[in-house]
Structure formats: C-alpha cells, structure tokens
Length: 512
Image (cartoon, rainbow, N blue to C red; front, side, top):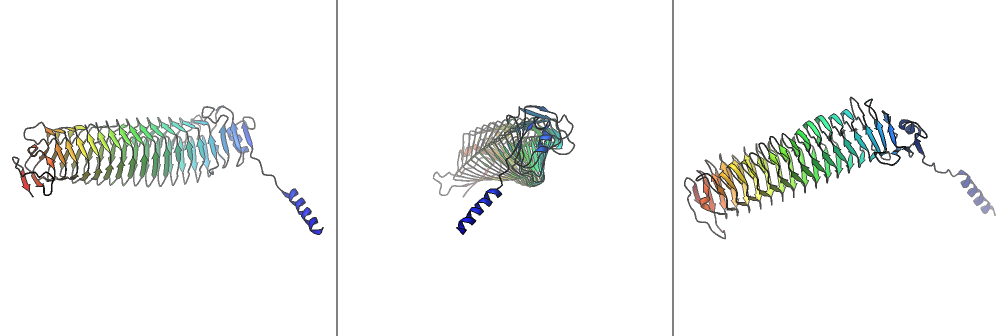
C-alpha cells in the first residue's frame, strides 16, 4: 500500500509539472504588422513572417536568426520589396542556417559600401529561395554581399541588372562559402571585376546548374572572378555572351582554383582569355566542358594561361572560336597544360590557332585532335620562346596556314610526338610542320601523309630550317615531302617498315 501511494503521488507530480512545447507562430503582413520590418520585429526564432502579395517600399530590413520570411505564394512575383535607392534592402548578421527568405523580388537597393540588395555578414548562413535581385547597387556586391565566414544558400534565384565596382550580382570575401543551385546571373555589371560574381580572400563557392549571361566587367571576369586562394566548384553551368577585357566568362588569379564539370562557354567576347583567364598561379580542372564561338581581339579566345597558371582538360572541346592573334588556348610565362581526349575544331586566328605556347610554357597532350583550324602560322599548334610539348596519340588533320606549319610550328621550341599523325594539312611552308630557330622535334611512330605546301621546295610534310633538328623514329613519311637546311635524323632500327636513308636538297639526313 505504501509503495502504491508513492507511485500515485509521483504520477500526479509529473502530470502537473510537464511543460507543453511552444508552438511556432505565423505573423501576417499586413495583418499583424503593417510592414515587413514590423513583422520581423514581432517574430522569434522558429516563427514565420508571411507577407501578402504586393509592393512594399521598405529598406534597411534586419533579419532575425531562425525566422522564416516568406511571401504568400512563395514565388518572387508575389512580393516586391523596393528600397527606391534609399539604402540597402536587407541585412543578415550572424543568422543561422534555419533562417530562410523565400519568394521576393528585392529591388532598388543602394549603398556606397556593401550589398545593395542583401548583406550577409559575420557567420550568416541563411537559405534564400525563389528570389529575384534586380536593379540593386553597391561598391561591393550590387545584388548580394557575403562577408566574414558567411555561407548563404541560394536556390532558384535570379540576379539581373545589378551593378557594383566589384561583383555586380554577388561579391564574396573573407572565408565565405556561398552555394548557388539553379540560379541565373544576367545583365549585371562591374566597373572593375566580376560582373556576375566576384569572390576573393579564401572563399569557397559551389555552383550547380547556374547560368551567367550578358554580364559585363570593364577589366576582368564578366561572368565570375575568383582570386586570392578562393576555390570554386561548378557543375552543369553555362557562360554565354559575357564581355570584359580579360576573362569574360571566368577570371582566376592569385592562387585561385576551380573545378568545372559539364560546363559550357559560348559567345563570350573580349581582348584575351574570353572563355577563361588563369593567371598568378591559378589552376583549373575541366571535365566534359566546351568552348564554342568565343572571340578574342588578342589572345586566347577559349582559355589564356599566364604567370605559372595550370589547367587540366579531360574530354573537352574548342570549336569555332576566333582570336586576333593567338590560339583557342594561349599559354605564356611558365604556365602548364595537361589535356586528354580534347578536340580543337574549326577555330580561326593568327598563330597557333588551336593552341599557342610562348615564354617557357609547357604542355602534355594525349588523345587530342586538331581539325580544320585556320590561321597565319601553326594552324594546329604554335610553340616558341623555349616552350615544350609532349603529344601522344594526337592527330592533326586538314588544318590550314597562309604562311607556315599547317599542322604545327616549332620556333626555338621542342616537341615530342609519339604515335601521332599529321594528315592533309596545308601551308605555304611546311604543310605538316615547320621548324625554325634551333627548334627540335622528336617523332616516334608518327605518320606524315597527304600534307601540302604552296611554296616551291618548302616541304609538304615538313620544313626544317637553320639550326633546327628533327629526329624521326619508325615514322612513315613520304621523305620527298621534307625540305629546308636543318637536320633530320632517321632511326628505323626495329621498325616494321624500314625507311632507306635519303638526302633532300639542303637537308642533312643522317641514318642511325
């Protein structure tokens, strides 16, 4: 009886001391508060502020951590917040990942410093979904500014018509890590860098299925700019019709790095590196990416690498790009390229229409093709100024040069060709390949067939000039197709079809 009494007493105590969980509340605007700012002031973490459709002329709205701010339908066309150029539209400071902003058009924000539309700072990580940022302006981040370890997520958002000195659509700095999914950045502008987006100082970006189109930047990175140890991961993204002097699609420098998968660069325009510019120890890895119809008035209509930058290409394509001077890809200043299963087709320009290397640059290519490229010298490739390349299982076909080297030119440079082919290329001198100024070529099991030259005794397959040297091992050339006053060394020991030693005019032919 005594034990039963204490059990009954304990049960009674528990029943009277249990606290009911607090229910999250929904605050209606304009029902509970006449303004969005007023609705947020009423709310606590876990609450929702639900805004009726319409236009609200407000600015300097401060979000609260853990609050969900949502339009009535959740669509951007439902509610417009128009700051009328009075100040910044909204700020998130130190808000958690449970904070959400959904279904708004954020317009007309203006500030002389950071984030005309939205400013996320100090460890803020809100989710922003189904929003449009348009016509906002600031010095950093016309549409959005992310600063000091902030990691906002943008889902199905549009950034259009925003402007800034740096980062017209979005600007990120200071260990911030924004994520964009299914977003569009178009018609934004920057008077300096990053028309669509600009990130620097150890930021980390993740972009999936995003588009950058018709953005502009005066100097660099009309689509996106990354620098100073920032990293970017892009999947299924497109860059089209962007324009800037350098890196119209993407610009990376000062140890910035990017990994791109299934991305496209189309019809971007500028002076150099119009698809992508990499400089200052920047690096990029590209898989299944395409560069089509980009134009550069100077060098690198597809990609330009400078200042020890590196790029790795796998299963990429460069088609129909045009350069005023050098290459769909242009490498300089000790930069390096590695490419596998990559195609260069129907590009046009001056020297090295498919690819041009200068100033101690290096390249390693495997399973690559150069087809129907046309220019003045080096329709496929042009190497000069102490550059070097190794090519394995690569082919050069139907490339065309008005002067020299329909397939390739080596000028004070070296190349090693293994199991390659140069077929049906055309030039005035050296239809297949031209070697100048102490150039050196080593070709192993490489075919020279069907090449043509327009000049008399200029070498349909190859022109080896001056102090240049070509070493042919187990190759299958029509030997009468070589000309020049350089040296060719034939090494046919162990070949299936030995080639007899022969002398072609001024060429010094040595048999080993």
